[in-house]
Amino acid sequence: MATLAESLTWRGIPIGVTSAWGEAELLLGEVGAGSPGVLITAGIHGDEGPWGGWAVKKLLERLDLNDIRGFIRVAPMTNPLAMQADTRNAPVDQLDLNRAFPGDANGSYTERLAHILAEAALENIDYVIDLHGGGSWCVNAFVFEMEGGRELSLCFPAPFIIKAPARDVSLTGYARSLGKTVAAVEMGGRSENEALWAERIADGLLRALRQVGVVGAELTPPSVEPPRAVSDSIVLRPKRGGIFVPSVSAERIGTLVEKDRLLGQMLHPATYAVLEEFRAPFDETALLLLRPFMAQLEAGAMTYVVGRLARE
Image (tube, rainbow, N blue to C red):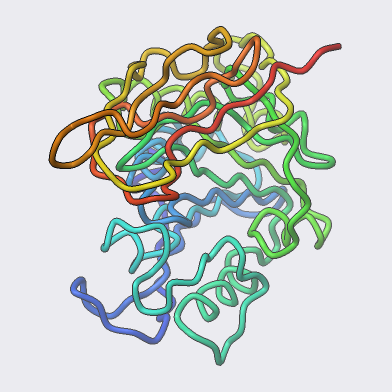
């Protein structure tokens, strides 16, 4: 029997702009019927690239129509213009799609896209899983816990879990305001372990589908260790532009490091003198996001996301 990847029915919804890839449209793939309905999205931020969509493909290649009850809808390239430009937001309006819900049918590109997602992608959906992860410049390793969605988040093999801020203007926040159960996943991205992260995310998606009753228990991957709770997360950003040189590799993502551990440095772009150091701020600092490669950075660029290990 054909896999779910081969059985998807695709629907393109025009967004109203033309790009280098032709007329921009939101592509929704769907397979199955009835309930429950699960929406899986990836690529809301364009610089998060193809990693989430790759994990969705790996999941759908594991299953066939005999394996599912209800239906699965996927949007693996949620923000086409931003992904094409490899930027967080689409260059045409520079709005953050994940702060634009429920959108505006008569607004700018991003506002129209949010409106399409709010109307067409969420239609008849019971559960939403939004894949963010790292991107073309970083790798990360955690899941957000949202009200009512803890069990869904625990399906993913992430080292850390952190409570999500309440934002109804995000896709998951807006979906939750409509009574849907949601999870936001921040795993994977640019590193030497891209394929491994994609497989881990696909495993998590399969566990999540089992959790909500879309697939049978016999298809569930082995259980995983529960993630460690993190609080007081902060973003480390350079005070001025320059050359960033990491001091910890992608292998350290999802681990704890001691206070004052050197994470990376900013160097002068001509003299290569040290301008600034990034150091672990907590006694047990959780590495949630890091840049694993040397790069030119502007002042204020997201460089590390770290957190304090929560105490019982």
